[in-house]
Image (cartoon, rainbow, N blue to C red; front, side, top):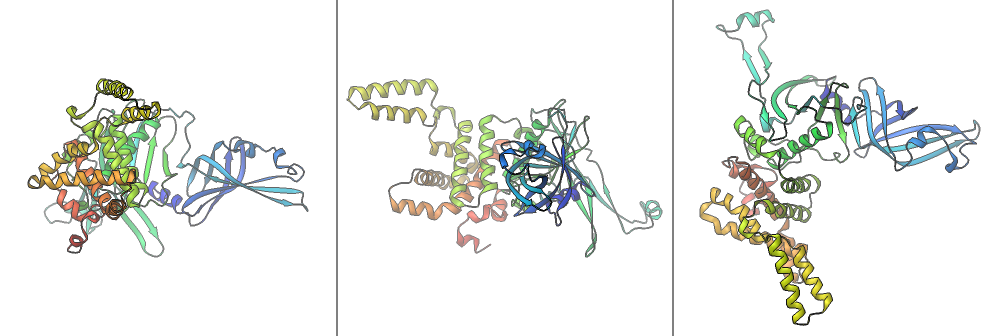
Length: 492
């Protein structure tokens, strides 16, 4: 069973995994199963009935090692899956059943793991990682199949090869990409694209072969797993932003000299977040062009904390909500944070200017006899306000893109910026004007999707990527297109 099959098997357990599990220094029987789209571990602890007379007096190594708020690491081994490590198991329920005939009490302990690993966690969490393999069968829309070549029988070429192989109809070859490694900004990490093959067998449909795009990461020397996970997360965010789909890799395998391969099969927050793979025309930029992907990677990684926060807010909105109002507020906030980085310098208020203004305002309020409470409140509002105006921030980011895409319709872009700013103010501050509030609620669903589209455009422009696919992306992308007016959608 290959890595992808093991990951799929763990994430779709038709039958529970019942085996012996190690908790600290104790070994107990237990079952790992899926309930309501999340994993649940049940451990069974047997104690003498006299010891269980009072719950507070039970002394058992498993009970002691998993007592909340402890989040224990539980390790089991079973045929077909190998070693399974459940990291950060939080015990959320205990049920006791007493057998007075045999004088025993069996406690069933219920756990929700934070992560499921295939393999054993190294003793040293900071042990350097030497390599990372990212596998996913759904990356065809992003990269197609790099390194894949199909050969047919020809009377002039390769006839001897086909004859030695029994004269097959076709030969598939998966070559390592011979291009230069792609540097991930200033992180010290390098990436290479390749294709591998995944095979499966079903008693109903027979054998299946699937081309799998593989991303191989070479970390900087001495990089611990925590740093590697951050880089992988940023790569997932990159693919999320330009497809407007909540992407995460099916299989992430870490290699180190101190232990064997360690594959992340599941982590808390991943359930019920199925990624629908986009086709090539549903992605804003063409990552099959190695130069485009190289430019994106070199400029995406190593972003400032402000830029990273903006992208995190945006991807969180894409991944975690289908509610139009929640999505709009989150993406609008990501634009506000992005403006701290992209807004023109002359429109920013410096710390010195703010301090001088605060002193002048406080003095003026005192001179006109304003009460201390109200004066302090006004000064604090100014102190906590943004360094830039939100409508101005939007225009500074969106208009440069609009000048490239629709130079003859800049007024419409300005009107869009004003509409977004007004809607944000009406929803966040809940205006007393009921008509304005109702109008904001009525348009927020479509406006949130259109705002997602513009965020992707702004990011692509900032990274120096071509915007030649913007129009087809808007029409074809599953998320972006629903930001179009209904009368337009009806014609598509």
